[in-house]
Image (cartoon, rainbow, N blue to C red; front, side, top):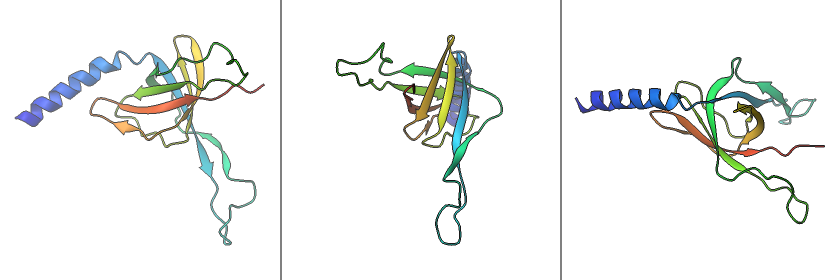
Amino acid sequence: MVSKLNAAFYAKAGRELARLFDGRCRVYHLELRPLGPDGFCQSGGLGEQQENSGDAWPCHLAFLQQPPAGLTVDGCPVEARCRLFWPPELPELPPGSRLQVEQQGRVYDLVCSGLPVRYPTHWETELRLLPKRA
């Protein structure tokens, strides 16, 4: 009886939380090449970024530390940290995955910097902004 009530509660909470997913996320991960017989990576380096998902995932990006408006006093960029939330039926993000999140008309390039945690209503992981290269 209690487990049915918990399942109903989490199902309703998950539906309500899904209303907050106002962003879309594309996931890229490093496709590693197989090791050769000598134990080293085959020619061509480690691999390349491959898109992991065909469709953009619904998500919500919340900043723990706001992205910098510019540079700091000494000219070094400040790194912004954020947290990504996505539905529980979607797969886990491997650490080191690169993501492109579009939310509220802005596009963010991010990298997964922590292990994702799965709750009954959603997934959650820490990310950091990738620095823009000139």
